[in-house]
Image (cartoon, rainbow, N blue to C red; front, side):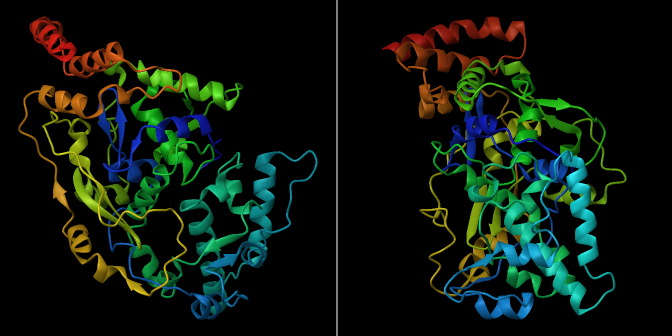
Length: 433
């Protein structure tokens, strides 16, 4: 992947519409959910294979010292960032005057290559573990402290923001021959869902921000936040640049929230990959059996559901009425990975959910011929709350407008629109009553 500028306003606008109980976005036209297919096509990450699960420990000291050969504080579950970066030649290689971002990255790569073992053996394994811990902890599964001020994606690995990296993936790095067999993309999606569930008052970025940005570019193109600069490249994230917006964050956020409030339903792209083939891209062909399925996602103590049945229109189906999910038993009260005071085997604790993953979850099907029943139930549950603008005052008139927008989203042509006029008038009358 190339450079990508973080779009804090877009990420925040999406986060403000996240329903943590249903693990889905709530828009005026219904639920929308980032899926495993989105992960596979946008990032190229592997979404099939063994779940990222196993043991979590109250102390990783002995394991870290043995596998990384770095000094570790026994009282902490975090690995100091500086020794990791120094071991890879990535520390204290700052940008020099007159050097462009691309030149800086090229020089960092050259310095790092000189530090890494070039022949297979113990030192090469050690270098690889150091890189993977840094890559997983500060890029793929980054937290707000890592990503808050990073302008460009590759620099996150070299950033001096954040003092430490969590050990939680270290047990899976002991046998390096097995690392490639895990469904890192599914764990990544669980981490994204968890990151979106944080307070919407936070303005920093958590998680791998390019994924959500490109997801929005593909599904909500009329927002105009991305530039399709290099069509045809794979993974799809390589095709896009984030457009610069010189306005302050507050103005950008208010504009985006209002734009989503009034977003034209017919401009929503439910199936952005219809023209995309799998030929020549083995990771897509192997991932396809996981597309279009509701399934549990695993990242150790993150065990979260992908409720794809709430977004059947993304699969080319009519949306049937479904039971809206409630908070699940694995939902954590906070985002911190600290506080896991007991050694826990998540393969045993979440055995039912692990079995669900190994069976590839459940295929999403629908026998509905219209979206109307779902949209009416959706309007009753969310009402005017689908409008999230900070200055948008919701009253009875706005709730009626919300119902109108939801019902009209099922209208496909003029003939259907005329037939539904009488139904809408009756619905508005009952609603006012």
